[in-house]
Length: 232
Length: 232
DNA sequence: CGCTATGTTGATCCATATCAATAAGTGTGG
DNA sequence: CCACACTTATTGATATGGATCAACATAGCG
Picture 1 (cartoon, rainbow over the protein chains, first blue to last red):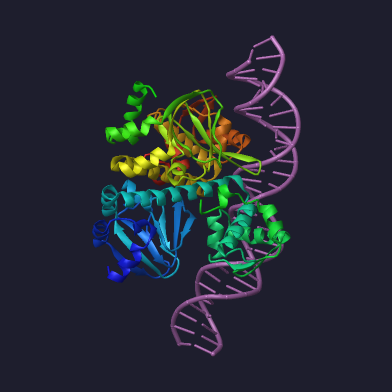
Picture 2 (picture 1 turned 45 degrees about the horizontal axis):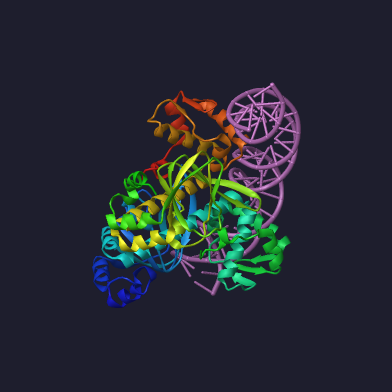
């Protein structure tokens, strides 16, 4: 791995606090790779040989069963993915594929586990990251079980809007069919759900979303910090 | 906390490897308490002051939104719960209530975090436990998104059967209405789902389940290690 | 022993999926 | 640069899984 790259990675939350010697040891066996879009990086069931860190592009985590497939989440830079499998040295529970041209760091799982044991600061960073991931999945489960599909969509739009600094106009960064799958609905159903939201001041033109009546939409969506605050 | 109790806790996975001095420090501020059934131990949104460890009885983790409520999971002894909130020092995302008379250890969250930083063995145990929790929620999400309610129920029965060492006759340890909620369906719907499963060799009388045609049920349920193996 | 919560069954309704057709992009090769 | 193929998005028609409402049975529990 080139030095410039190392320097970049070093600044990530997970690595920023750890000792130099441990960082060097950890990145010795690591490498960085570029992937074209729609490349499978990981298949569920595989042994977790590497912890992945997405530097640029985007990656879809998905799962299959009995001929069906669902999007579990989308990973944006800079994030690790498949951390739990690495720690438990267990098979991946999700598959991963690039959505666009992506740059990914691969850290040998065994090195990650060794470094975890050796470096308390790294251990701390890892456990914080993992706790964050856990809470995300819990929030997602609440979203799925407590809300209808239109409610999920409405709250998704509000979350995206928040990421766009609250602007009334913002763009969707996810293909609609993928968004539908990640929200647990069919593309057709989502198309209709978007139409339903017109009544609450949502206008959609391609990727461009305009929220004309913020309070109306919020009153309908009833966003909750315990489901929708991706920070906490 | 009485010495006998300390000794018991010491033998748990999370504590068994750690140094004596750290264990003493960690349990100094801890206490053990008995609760009657249906007592709320935790309300979602509260600050996570304590890591909870269930010694006996059972605890339901549940969440609410907009007047609706859903069972997220049921905790059986011996398990920690609300670990991620403790680590992140963030509000609980789920509420917890006892289902039966239960004995619970309460460890001050700040002590847990301090001990995590001080004791690598403890850190290792905690991160393993958390990774396990994460993977459970991921499997549950796959179950919810990839399967119909009847399929979820069929696979639930097979999992319970496995826990009962594969016996053809076993008992449900959960109230049916709670089970329905945890599987993401209504009690009425579950009643009918159980009737549907008669066609695949499932007989239910109260809590007593009899599987008369194992292979038939498995052929229908199509259990997968990546969804149903609670060990991995 | 009666009260209250749980479980079952039936009738009906509704949300969402499925199937089908069309339109609109998007990328590819000539 | 355009024609063509292919995927995605939308819309309509219809089917169906699951929810809701209601009635009743039953089983714990005080």
